[in-house]
Image 1 (cartoon, rainbow, N blue to C red):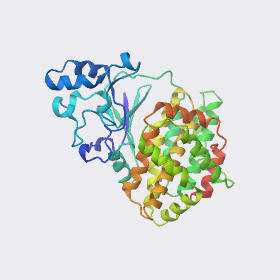
Image 2 (cartoon, rainbow, N blue to C red):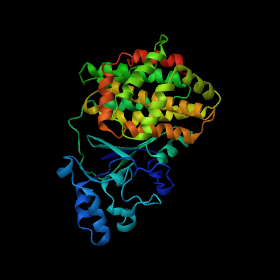
Image 3 (cartoon, one colour):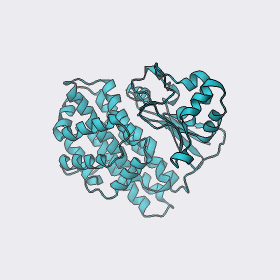
Image 4 (cartoon, helix red, strand yellow):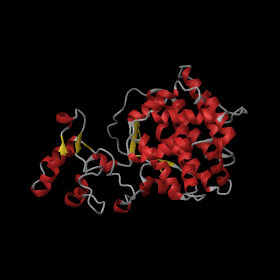
Length: 375
């Protein structure tokens, strides 16, 4: 079996009590069946404490087993923001979601791809704390059972589209706006070839596509921003932090706000590298899911949307800081969006569906607007 991971994957270390935004706060904590049954057998006072806050999903919610939260906090997150389950029972006793987070997995064929979520500030530090290009590595690992989500199609083609998209986005001979235009145009052209349906010879045609973009007409950024805000308003809200950030974004997200931040970016090339990292992150994490529905272009739009909203949040933070911006602000902006969108399959599905009908988020309009607002 092939395992693909980002090159920073093995560098990750949970910063536990030093985290300013614990993953044990604000989210419902699902307990897998194996851990749930093990917790029911723990003896003594700690076992009684476990069982006093365990909720059987089949009895009360019809969904997952959970812990009853203490306000917004996991009931086992102590005053030092450390885990009492870890302290009392050891790391092996953590339930699956606590062991895996911030890792996410995509599986197809004989491939397992693992990435790490920007909702974790330690991951944000790994990504934004570097200036070299993000790389992805492959390892041959012992065969394990793959929990496939269905029959996979166009695997070679979609892997190539993903890898070529990353190459385009990391081509530092071009400006940020031009890279996004070329990326979106390439993804749209590749989608057209896939839509024709014949797998025979498809990969050769996709490899023959030029990674460029015809000169785009200028787009009007205001309708694009209005459409983005409209889509965000339809999300299931997962936390108060997002509610506050989105409210501020609704008031301030304008072409002028982006213009202020772009003027600052001209003086700080690090921001261009961070733009690159954000887009590459979304492309690696989501593109190969298209082997199950053959929808590459919606995932390209999803990557663009993630970048664009994070750009808006970053620009907002820049203005609020009075013209100051640092890596902590970038981590905050990426984390705020990721927590709201990437941890809800419903929110992801909603956005992917909306992309099918949104004229403002057509490839042509995105490339036109980017040509106008990003240097």
